[in-house]
Length: 346
Ligand SMILES: Nc1ncnc2c1ncn2[C@@H]1O[C@H](COP(=O)(O)OP(=O)(O)OP(=O)(O)O)[C@@H](O)[C@H]1O
Image (cartoon, rainbow, N blue to C red; front, side):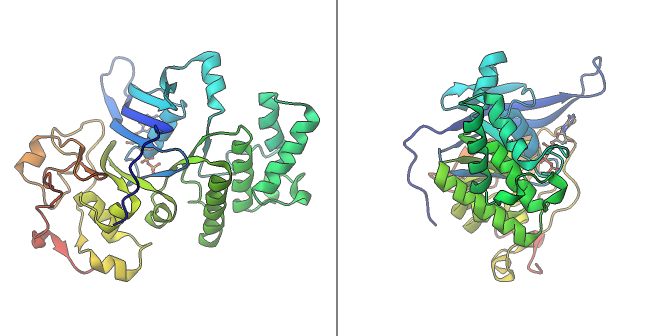
């Protein structure tokens, strides 16, 4: 296992105790969806932090709250020490340049009537930095930096392929000289071959510009390719968090192990190392969270304590955090011999 060097520099992004609750059923109703429930993590400058988990686990809501596109209910979102969760008005507008977002569907996030170069140029104009000629030159430079050709500058979004459109979106995001780029499934809509090109581009841009990424994906192969550290979300909570190598070599939470053992993106040799953990049923409703572990109802290893008491996310080794009663403080998983719940037929 390759543990990263201890972090000495303060993190660029430090999220502590983030909660996002949605009121549902009208103003008289007390029903609340606990979409994000006490989520904490930090991202070192120049690194990539991955969020994985099945649909509805709270990944996008976490990203939107960090981007200040959704109001969080509690918690701190510190960017380079400043709690951007508290900023309003001009202070928020000016801080926004430092964090940009890239969404899954580039077509939906581009104006179909705007030429590609104008989309990038508009982002520079909004900041009104330098002269118009200087901004035009900067837009052209950004266009080239993301691998688009000069003769494509005046084309409209529908004249580009999906991968090229995502390049335009990246160029527009980079116009603000952001430090943090939040990427919500940025390659999921693309063909596999194109995915690799965009991921390689993102890696190159990270090296060239010192970018920090928060990267959301349900594709474990993509997460493994790109991320330095990874958190696994389940029902609005982080159930396990560790450096990539540690998490992929030695997942401890039963949910992480179930995800890994079922991942089609891993080759069969890798999957063979892990006994298949079968999950039954669906996650509980975020409108009515169970008192104990949110995963207990589906966990083949749950005991009475798991159903009664919610496990805290605790540090087990220097870098691995796990929220599971069945893993002890010495990072031993006490369910490993419970073969009845597993099958090797991955
Ligand atoms: N505006 C909203 N109002 C009410 N509930 C919401 C709202 N947005 C999200 N939710 C709920 O919050 C929970 C988390 O959703 P979220 O979209 O963050 O999950 P996700 O992990 O990103 O899923 P996906 O991979 O499908 O995008 C889900 O139960 C979802 O139904």
